[in-house]
Structures are given as structure tokens and as C-alpha cells.
Length: 395
Image 1 (tube, rainbow, N blue to C red):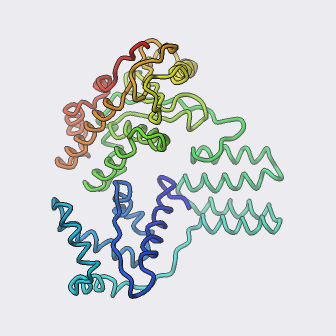
Image 2 (cartoon, helix red, strand yellow; image 1 turned 90 degrees about the horizontal axis):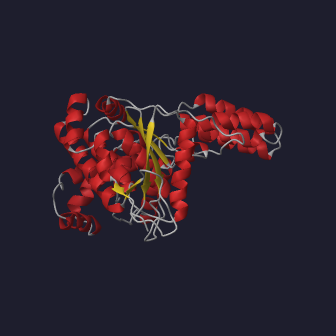
Image 3 (cartoon, rainbow, N blue to C red; image 1 turned 30 degrees about the vertical axis):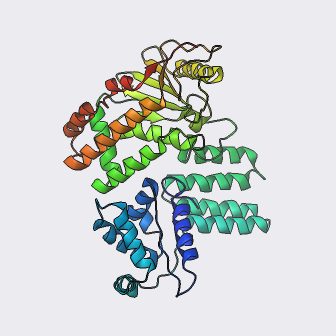
């Protein structure tokens, strides 16, 4: 299952439902479930994903939210006391819990048009009807409004179509890739679309924030979830690179992931406005004490790629994200290259968190002038970002 946003929301919903189900096998069972982390908090708050839970789980989550509102700013011990109250079957708690579920109407299960299309296509393909399978997926695309879902369906359609018409399958896969960069790349690759930055950072940030978030709580949770992914971790490099692009958009910059999207170029590309760019190689999974030659050569290669794609009217700064600021003895950095170490990334994360807190406090993410003042105050204007980098030391 895939979601409209990250491709993982539906799976997370399913895991939460299954986890609660495993904790309660009969009417006599009871348990307490803790959802930890900003991503899961965001998941159960977002109305779009909340609607994917069963009616009973939605009612329980609503009760949990009511309880949580009364525990705001309370110590962990207070939360544990509430959990113990539930586990000890306190009569008042049992009454409260049952009241929340007593009027939940039974509703039929919902199966998305995309899921139906996939199942029908699979059944037809197993029966040897590949033409029928591709037709079912085409109908699924027509009934699906979200671009990422359309991309998944088109990728599967290309898989079936490849058995009978490989050339047409490549065209379908190209269309799939245009909607969802997580699907397979076509053999001929996608045409690179140049990234343009805005000279009006606060206006761009305002447009992005007002389109993405409905209220203060969503902003706080959304940015906290982003910052949670923006950590050095060998097992979460893809999440880091996506969070890096999302961070740029939150503060009014344009961003791409060329290597992820088209299979060539840097891990990240930021357009800072005034024809200035950052070419970024993110090595958040590195563990070596020095910057290895392979990493710095990759940064040099990405700069060469940038110079082939953009003309001399623009300028680019090579940026490496790495735990160390010192080259290995056999490595040589491109001219002007800078590094964002873990310490400097923590400083950037702190600035963004303070920016988010200020947005929530002021409640003015819909006013460019207010956003600009906060960007200036928290040193997040395009011209300030250089301060979060360091010079690369020779080995």
C-alpha cells in the first residue's frame, strides 16, 4: 500500500491497527499503546491519515487526544500514572473508555480504486490476459487523482506491457516517473528540468507553508518530523536527503534531488535566488574520521554535472555534508568547497526549530513580512546559510 504523500502512511496506519489488535485478542484483554516520535504524532493528527483508521481506532485516538490535552507540560510520571490507571482497570477509566466506543457505528471497509486496479490486473495477468491487466491499470489511473499513486499504477502497467510491447512500456514508464520519482527509471532516462530560485524568499516560504499546513499544530509537528529525519544515521540516508530538500522549501528556497530523480547529478540542489546555487553531496551515513577521496571526488563530479546543465550566468557553491571537516591525505577538494558537519547541522536544526516555534507563537505564517522578520531573526535567509558551513581542512 502506498500513500498520497510519503508512500508509507498507509503501511504505518496498518501497523498501528495490527499492533493494537495484537495487544487485545479478546474482550478480556487490555493494553496501553504508546506512539513515539514526531512522524507517528503527525500521522494520527493529520485528518487525511486519521480517516484511514477504523472507526473504533479513530474514537480511541480522539479520546487519547483529549487525555493528552490535560497532560500538557506534565512530567513523564503523570503519563505513566494514566497508563497504570488503564492497566489496573480503574472503574472510572473503564467507563470513560467504553463510553467512547459505545456509539461507534459499524462501517464497511474502504478499498481504494488503486488497490482494486492492482488486484484486478494481477488476476488477469495470472490468467494470461496481459491486455486486460494493462487495461485495468489504465482505468485505475483514471480513477486516481493523486500523482504518486498514478505513478505506481503506471509503473505496474509498464511491467505487464513490457511482455508484449517493450517500446510502449518505456513510454509508460517515463510517464510514471514524471508523476512519481520513486518508480523505476526508463532506459532512456528522464530529461532534466532546470531549477529556478526566487528572489523573494519570504513570499515563497509563505506560499509553501500556507498550502501545506492548516493550523499551528500541523506546522509544529510537520517541522519536528522533518528535523527528526535530518540526523546523521547510516540507516536513514534517503530520509535525510528528502528532509534536506523539504527543509529548503520550508524556508522559501527551491530544491531538487537530481541523483534520486534522474540518476545523475548531486544528492541535493538548492536554488538560493539571485542566480546562486548550492550543489550538495549528502554523506550523512559516513562514519570515517576523515573525508574520503571517493566522497570529495563525487562532489567534484556533481559540480561538473552542474556546469554542463547551467550556463555561466549562475554560480554554484559545492557543499559536502559529512561528520568530519578534514580531508584524507589523498583527497583534494573542489575550489571553494564547504562542509556541513554534524555540529553545524545541529545548529541549523536548532535554528529551524526556533523558527517553527516563533511561527506557531505568532500565528503569522500567512504574512510574508512576518516570515521575513523571523527568517532574519533566526539566520535562515539565503545569505545567512553560509554560516552553517565550515571550510574543508587539508589532510
